[in-house]
Length: 155
Image (cartoon, rainbow, N blue to C red):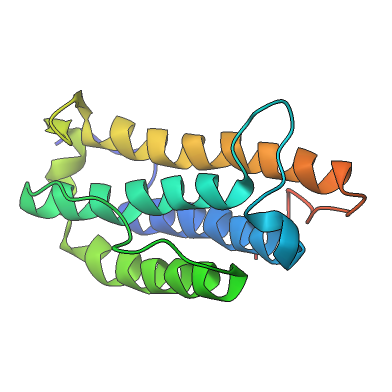
């Protein structure tokens, strides 16, 4: 196996740092705007957060098992429920992650029957997608007159 740039544990910590920041973006939204506010016809931030939930754990489960299911089984009705789903997914990632064999990151798979690539590239896409759409959420917060969480702070 070729040497890796980053260990699986370090990758998970990096990803969870982004997830902690995304959680703070969710928390920053007023309850009445999280599910409704958008700019220029883009989706509300709650829909983007559900997209993240539909990718992270399902991708990790699929990498481990080869079974490709979707995200949350129900749509949250409010911020409290969305944050609960977020926290459940965070805990599940921490449990699932160590089950990915180290050599698996270099293997080519087809995720969700549609996306073919090396496992590490597919996981990077999941993180990149979250970063990209979280930036959309920070623009929404600024438009609402709310200072978003600082990007460098992923603690």
